[in-house]
Amino acid sequence: MKKILLTIAMAFVLAACNSTSQGRDFDMEVVKGFKKGETTQEQVKEAIGDPMGVNDIGNDEVVWTYSYSEGQGGGVGFIPYAGHVGGSQNETKNVTIRFNAKGIVSGLSFNESAGSSSHL
Image (cartoon, rainbow, N blue to C red; front, side, top):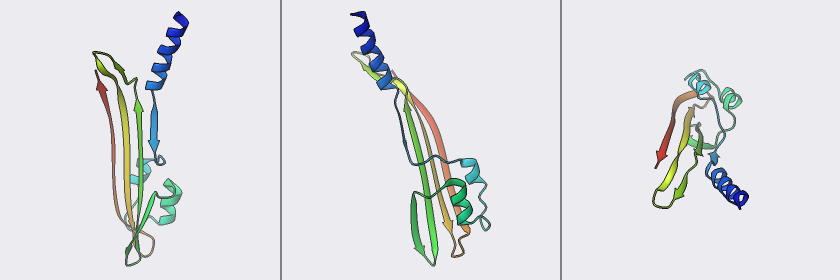
């Protein structure tokens, strides 16, 4: 009986410690090194890969977007009378790069956030 209870308890613990991600991870320090008026589309693609989105904005200009998010649960579960317990950690990265008609970076914006939450 103890083995069954232990197995059930371990299943709850393992199920609660889950991880999800969307997009392909990339190095924000590399992104911060891109230079307006200098960095080419080929250099961007070599450094952080193919974009998630490509938008033609007219005048032979194009915008590439990159996005990555990851969330990891930390033993979140439900205990009767106590409610949800545990916590989570989240990371999000977004990059938008505008290229001129010559394929050179003409605009760059990015943000990055990391955080955690806990519940009891």
